[in-house]
Length: 591
Image: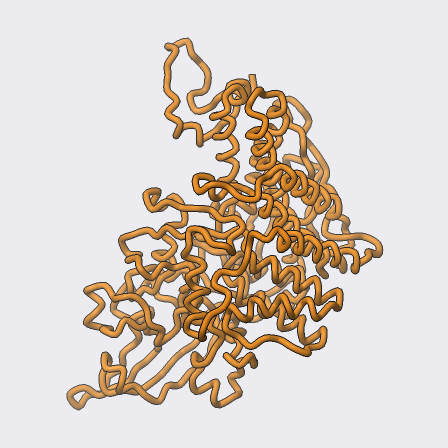
């Protein structure tokens, strides 16, 4: 008899022993047993959610894009230097990225298929059964959407294969995969509620299903899949496409989420720039909010098993944290000035004070030299009593007639955990709870899969490509107002496209968007070929702890990591062992 492994059922306290002759697997239950008990069926669905993963692991996808540099490497260099192969995919083969892995997604898809095959024949409460079906449709669509983003068209499996069946299946086309995901999202939306009680926060809703559909249709309309450089049907459309119809579908899908009327931007009307920065930062620390469409909740009690140690993984080393994914100069320079103009190192005013008068989201997302932060640990206070980030390379001062040089406390040259210091001169502030001592305590901050701002950005992007610029500016200005930035007006299509893309870059920073956006816009050859940048800061002073005496700041950008681009990197390679198991699979171009 077929058996199903469900780790989640263990929490239900199932016990029992039928003696030495009982040879049923002790960590598994038969399908018949699961679908005879509504609690076990619910546990089966609950376990599928874990396949969605999250983005608050020790390595972030942002370190394989032009957002951050992972200082501990863990083979991220192979990805950003375009050195991956089907047998060595670098950090992408790390289990922290299982939510993008071929075999892990197909394991979860098999779970969804099993559930959908069996649920109709159960005698459970009809409404409950329909809701769980909706969850299964959503999850199957979500797993396929992650495969689509990484690989393009993939085999569309809806049956549950037996042990002795031939499971060799060729890849479906990109179009067929998009259509399948959209159909599943529609099926989910028809069955799921708009909201749940507090006990079920984190489950898929109608809004989550429609948000997934909107994201996939936006991708489908994008340049990469329509230009389709390889010409393979698995990597994009073949033949001419009605781009207007594709963009219209993407815009309509985003509008469907907006028209639900249950989501809005979190604190959309700040009084000033300081409040705008606080509101944006607070958004990512809330357990729930009107902006969040779907998120993954964590429990402090689970410790390291989830996203709780994010602050430890990424906080400044001068706080006894590990400084893992450090923002790079490439991202820093793309935060606009407070008046909406572009930052420019050639501008002497900008170059003299590069962290002054920037987009408020910069202050909510980035810890930079001089940024205020939480109270220092006791052993660090004697070195830096001001509770401000120190990433300067060299402070020159005179003490007792002797010239001395000190490095910032949050650097590799500082006296606190110098082996964990970053190279770029920046640390992540976004997602990090400032009320928690991350050296000892894990935080309880959710990971957001979908939020309303993404939907607004999707709507704006589709509107721009349809040349419906008024709609685009109206949408973008909602986000600009919340950010405390000047509103757009009177821009032509090309200029608004550039501004919209930059708006998406800073609004969605570190949220597993940029890795894919740069590819689908086909700007990766220009963007990802640039080395990861950092900042060296030199200054003078009279005391290493009296900041009021510090003067003559000099800023010098430099490369912290060599990077390169190869067009094969538009899609990730299918692992060699998967190709060996299924000789009908076609590898992606360039591998």
